[in-house]
Length: 344
Image (cartoon, rainbow, N blue to C red; front, side):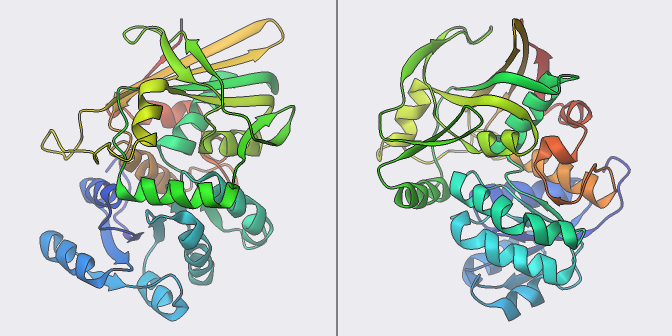
């Protein structure tokens, strides 16, 4: 438990693929999850398997959400599509006076959280941490650590070297919602602001360090990291790039969901995240490696929860991981789930 006290924590979407990893991580750290979600039957099955209390609550039922969060120290939202769940669950957390964290990867949902709740959360001295996951949280922490003492930079690149990407049903649904909201456009962050583009994202070769080596990537494959990084760092251009094979996986309707290959329920997917930050003629680089982007989200969000509940934070309001936490210290605490090293 890393010296933290036991807390009762609501997990919205507890029966989902990522939610189950979060419940297991909370348990491993000595916390007591409360299982919350829209599907009463799935909650009942998970409650029977774990022994934890189930509290069904639809996102459009404020009274049920209030009952679900009653007596809890915080809520972690794992239920996509987050365009539908973030607003109602944040509202319930604000009413309950408890911290809110989510694992949203949807660009639009995260932009909405910053736009709609920044003032209210700050005025209430509430803590709202969006995108505290592989996409959003990890990249933000890596860029923040790489920046170090730089107050600004010209560009930041986050390259995802995924061995494969077998998406969950939730990932597919969230992606469909995002595409519906964007229409024919894609988003990129350039020149200090967001651009809506209609051209296809370009392809290039990215020089991933060993053991991966150079790989073809889809550049400007914009993910939640771009939202979280630009929330608090003065970087003119921020781009995320995806290994071409993984991009093909996520685009294909034939790609199966992730399959467990170990006793923890993790798939055999591996990742290498290569971060490069440039300012003038100087360059800084940092690399993170691990296994299973869904499974690794659990230690990311639960480590964040522990830091929020023990006061190891730098601000209140709506804040991304790199802004609210000590990035270097947080990354060190992720071992052995994530291995972080300086880039060559």
